[in-house]
Each structure stands twice: as structure tokens, then as C-alpha cells.
Length: 290
Image (cartoon, rainbow, N blue to C red):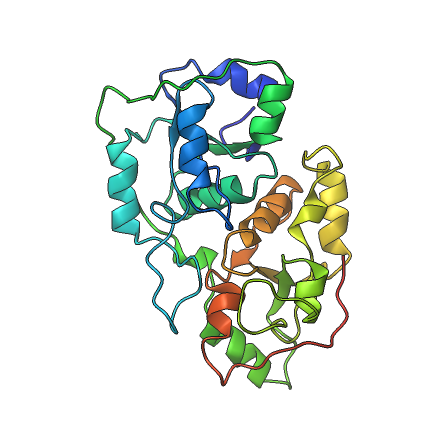
């Protein structure tokens, strides 16, 4: 495995977890039960893991009517939190959640954005760890040294609503970006919307549900299979991934990287931010892909 490996298997992870230069992070979460992850961690987790919470650690506070549901964290605030738990520049970071990788992918993207390139998601997450019969513990881990990580945000990895609106407003040019919506097809089409107050999608987007990146057992598809998913839509343009709140969009970005494709950009505010401005158009009738 090279330092740039974005995805590792449980057997590979086992080889690293006892290394002093490895930081293991648990990011389990449930949108419908925000307290679940911390409680589950306290009850049982992979030995050596430290818990980070999507709402408290990996997002900024929501500003009603302005931001989406999970705004990107302030880089300085996240840097301080990562130093607090002992992250050093020399560390390899391994991340897991319950298995699908939705929340792990968010932290993988955040660390990549902040300039820490030695970060990998454990394929299959905690489900795969348990299926391998590996030990669990309720003992908390505290690293015996301060972190020295310094954040260097790379904002070229993301794009904002204004750039997407400008693309929609210029019908004479070929769109600069292919928009990929990671939500389920019913939400994309506007048939169902269980979370946000407005149903639909950003006009011109294609639906690429993030669940389709996984096989029946919850592991990522092969790089070739993932590549085929993306190239079915548009092989030649820059890709922008979004979802409901900028979390599961990172799963599609991770999948593209695993596939060996150029890393797509993230529209971090995603659908829940897009709809805070009534002037932004809403699509509900275009057929999806995937």
C-alpha cells in the first residue's frame, strides 16, 4: 500500500493499527439519531480508535436560511480539534464508520482538503472488522503527545453555488461541470423528500446514488466497476459532486479516486444550501442515471 491509498481492507488495517504513527478514527453517525455515534463508541470500538462527531467536529454550526445542514468546519477549529486528539504530520490516518463509508468519506475529504494526504478509509468499516472476528473494546484512547498538524486548506477542491448558477445562466457554452447528485433517485426526481423542505435537484445534474458504489456486502466495487459508473454519465468534463448536505457526496468523490479518475470537486453546501435562495432554480422532472 502506498501513502496515497484512499481505501484499505481490514487485513491491511490490522497491520497498521498497532503502529505509533497511525491514528485510528471512529466517525459513526446517524442523521436520525445524532447521539448514536458517541454512544456506540463508548460501548464498543476498535482498540486504539478515537471518536469524532459529524455535527460537533466535522461541521460548522448551521446558519438557518444561509447554510446547508452540514457546513464545512472552520479550518482553524478543525485543526485545533485534530491537534487536541494528537494528529501529527507524520501520522497515517485510518477512518471507519458502521460500514457504508458515508461518514468516513467525509473525514477523508476534509483531511485531504486540509492537506493531510496520508488518510485511508477502511473498506466495509466496523461491520467488516466484526465479521473478521477482531477484538473490540470500550477503553478510551488518549495519545500521549500533542499534535502538530497544521491545516493548509486547498479550496480548489470545492466549488460554490455562485459558480454553479453562472453555469446555468450561460446556455450558449458547454457546461464547465458535470453535476453528480449522490442522493437516492426518488429524492433526485423530487418524488420524495424526507429531510429538506424543497424536493428536486439542481438543474442539469445527473443522479449517481452513492449506495451504488458498494456491493451487496457493503464493500466498495472494484476500481473498474466504479470507473464504469462514472464514465457512463460523461467521460470528458470536470465533475462536481453534491448530495443533501455535503456528506455522502464525498462518498462519490472517494469512489472516483478509487477508480483512478480525477478527483471531483465538492459542492459542500449541496441541496440543503441550494434551496435557501429562492432565486436558484429547482429541477424535478429530468430522468436520473444510476
